[in-house]
Length: 405
Image (cartoon, rainbow, N blue to C red; front, top):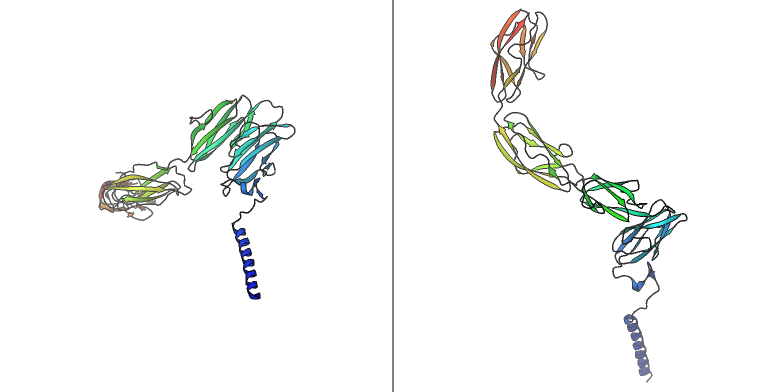
């Protein structure tokens, strides 16, 4: 009997404990009083896992503070705060003594009342304060629309805008303002918002009679070849031709390679020669026309261009110095006469193939120059045949005379 009673009490106790455990598992917890950026924990926006930063900047010749609701912004000291995406933030501007608040620029804010914006991404809002008593003023805001690696500066006359750094300024009502856009990389593509919209002139002039936003566009200059044709060459003669490019948005020196076809035999192309060029050079060994495609790569962009080089037969060899009459000499005084030729395929071999040199003179072939030299011993005029041959076997001859006094 006692044993049965104990079993019954144990069963009742276990059932009660099991029911309490189940209740703890299935009953919803109550809202807590913890907050995040001003929201109750169970009232956070649906996108609260994503966050965006609100940055406040203060511009103008006056002074003041900006505070936010929800709390977080107290600018001058704390001018940026990260909130959950979807947070509605209200900014309030308070001018310092002797200053007045002119208005807002950026985000969804304008005018001079409290600014309310809903954060969907990182946002910058500027509050403009000026010294009190300066009359009616309007805010000029400059935005930059950048394409690729393009960038630039926008400055104003009168001073105030220097964007880059200062893209918002206020001016007295009616001020004649001139903006000037200057590319620092790439090119200026034109004004796309404001009184000069549609103009590609780098200067934009207007009278400021209302709060105004102006947008200047900058873009990367497309990567392109400047040269599209290359000069002909001659068999056996040194060949040099440069290929130049322009534009591009990459940080690297332009690099070139042949991606189709081939260069004439005996020629090669350097991977790069300078920052935006390459050179094709060498000595052609075969007559004909070669077609090839060159690709340039600046680290981001590429461009291609088709080229051809025609290699003609060798130029004829011509003796350019001396002429039919060489310089005169004097008995007993050292004499020299340089020998030069052009065309064909150098280096050249020189020889005397008829007549004779003045006694005491000889023909010298050397790396430092071909010449006739020596100390003449006999007066008179001496006639001889001077012959030159290039590396392809072409020859030419010329009858020359030297007079020794």
